[in-house]
Length: 308
Image (tube, rainbow, N blue to C red):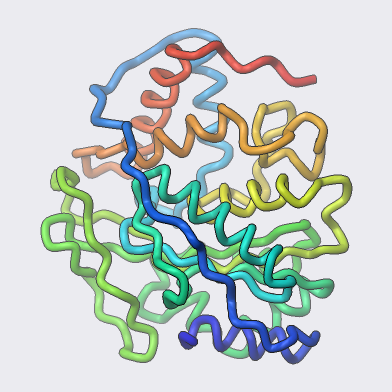
């Protein structure tokens, strides 16, 4: 068990009995993505405006940084659920990741994504941060995390699901990180994807913590919750995004009947995020590239229906 998961388990044990379960690992194999490089396009009109508003609202990179994505092997671990349910959540994350051409670890891999189900989410989040704040705000990676205000929201939120991503810069040519870390928290060396060589560094996700408050899930069913967790695992999503009326799984706890699962709109965003290979140095250009790719994708499919 990694230090990352061990600390989560220790904090969980201080609040509730987890039954001594090891985290469930995904039983899946990665599948190649069909998404390739597309030229930048500029589209005017209602669709472009809707896409731009959606992307601008949900993206949540650290200030001044590029949008980060998973490049290294992803391994979800799910704790505090029965084995079958935990495996289903881990498999959903793994399947979606594999469809984006992200390498997914085999069963028994060292988890770098931990999903914890609990009835005391705020207390657990606070206990984890207080037990070892470096996991959330490493002193040598402070500029690559979202800061004290976001961390306070992570601890005190009353949302059904809360999450915290950890990212770092790597050299796009070698795939090696460009900052030094203490050996106690040293992650695997991320591998930059071929072709992303136009910027001095790229930002990659290397860990994620997701806490699910089972008492606040409302009318959402288990598959909807699993899809929501998979979405916020694979992208840096703003927890307080105002996406009312958008056709997205991110609305599942507001309108569970409107978002029966991961939508075509969600999938389009993830495909565009992982296809973007901006060669410019301005972090905003990556967001614009995601918008352009998503508009291009939506032009090839029927425009999603307006939500009430």
